[in-house]
Length: 240
Ligand SMILES: [Zn+2]
Image 1 (cartoon, rainbow, N blue to C red):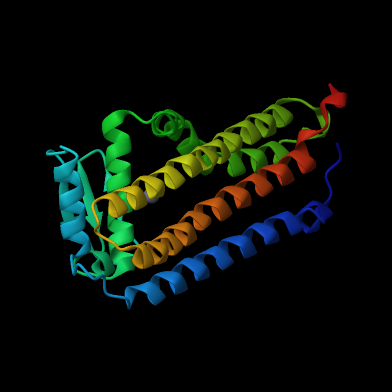
Image 2: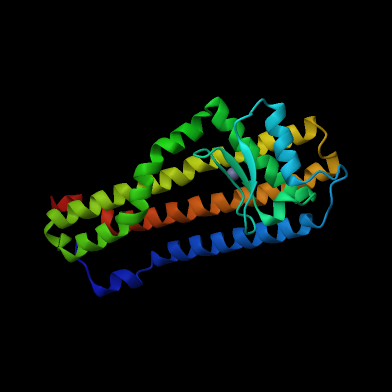
């Protein structure tokens, strides 16, 4: 393989641009959908925090606390310190959007409690994925600098870099069933416990679907970047 200054102005850059556009579109969509249904108050009048506490209690999860954190759409479940963290726009709000998000985070708690397989798999990949997302690109650049044209140490660095990057992509792909499943659990619980009525459920579902699309866009974007790396640097085994 020969390297030229053109390689960073190459046509495969379009793959990165597509990923960027997908991510921006998904992020805009979730913000607008959340804003829209943040203005719709649920009939029961329960807040996000109350709904989360109720779901945990009714599912016999007694060791997880519901907490208030700053920001918007920063909601998460932290299995390390066993907290469901609900943001400013969710914790004290009784909108259908907030209730949807609060229930979704509890969906993650229930996944954790029952050892839901994709969640376990994701936790297993996480350490390598973390390393991968940090060192893969510098490693590939270093490989190029060291002269991959001879197919020696430089090419090995590039290959390892691409493999590490693929773990970061795998992590994002395994995140998808985890996210979709948490939303499915949330909506089923909200329906069963009559926290939201059918019309409200549809709205909450729209919010959660939009949120899931941000994960789809992120995974697609990383997969496109991996494809680009493989196209650019992956196919020169014939030099060996
Ligand atoms: Zn989630």
